[in-house]
Length: 276
Length: 180
Image (cartoon, rainbow over all chains, first blue to last red; front, side, top):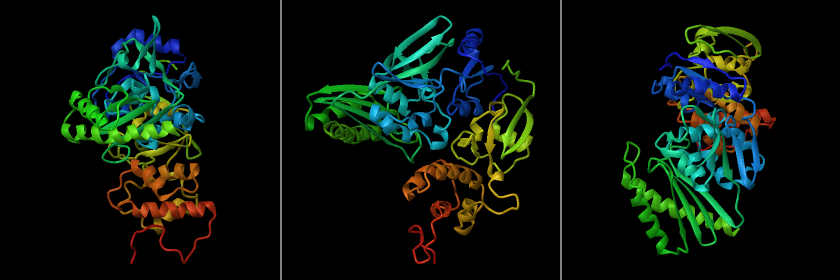
């Protein structure tokens, strides 16, 4: 399992990276942390003619707090976000989700934005972005545009990012006052791909639940003023609406059951967090 | 840097275990293959080649990293540590290697270099890890011989040595594993 041959470009700045994407378009692939791209190259699921390595590009390595959001540059690794001093206080959902992403060795290299750009249906960061209603910042030679999570993740492993564009950053809204956040996932072993991953935000009597691993993209629902049995009814309806993929890891029925059971738990955890 | 052409071999200079080394690689050459075949450092093993098994784990600028998920051309100018750098020049084992030896933490040894390099970073960042923290930390390194118990024991023992804690000879084994 070795990659097929490709040319390699390490641009000196963002403009050179964008020029390369403009020139090569879909023949080029952007390499950030490579923890999803490199396996795909090794297995020859992808065969780009040019690799554009942005992992050390100046200006993409910052974590900044701006306008009620954490803005994370495209070269920021998952480990760097995990080590960010204010993470648990400013973004409790991300703080809870991060340890579930692969292993610490892959988080040392894998980037936050790379995970969003890869858009695996079971990935934790796309789920968090969708549940928090975050945004992705795309840059092309024509300029910069910002796309909401729901519009960005269009299908399995597919996003709104054009062949001549690249993800330069992502914005995750910071903690809202009075809101509680909780994350949970079920996988065969720690660090494996999630069979089902869930993220909940509870504010007053409003519940927002995101589910990954069941449909092609993260699915999010909001409910107001639900109590007791009706939470279970709402979760059951949500589980059936998503359908659910059937694969070697789990049946669709098992995934629906996880949405019902772990969904209830994660909502209760978020409610507890809100009341603290 | 200018575009590195796919069919040419490019010079890559780096620091390997404190020593300046260099070699040549096509852009597509994986770092682990470069270490083994170009630099002759065969201590790092190649397992699954897609980042799952952890056998190829090395440290780049101190961070444990999968050498099968990086290109050789990406480490030009960087400082790398591999299992070859752990023992002293006279062959004396590092505290972690010694603990692996004493706790039977390896059988076939295929996973061992990756585990040693992973645990090396774990103990630097957390000198007193709990058993649970160790189990989570090594979940990215697959071992098919030991059942992990002895690796956890060895890690706890090495952590104690590195902290300078005196071993308590009356204490039960560091974990629940039965040793008769």
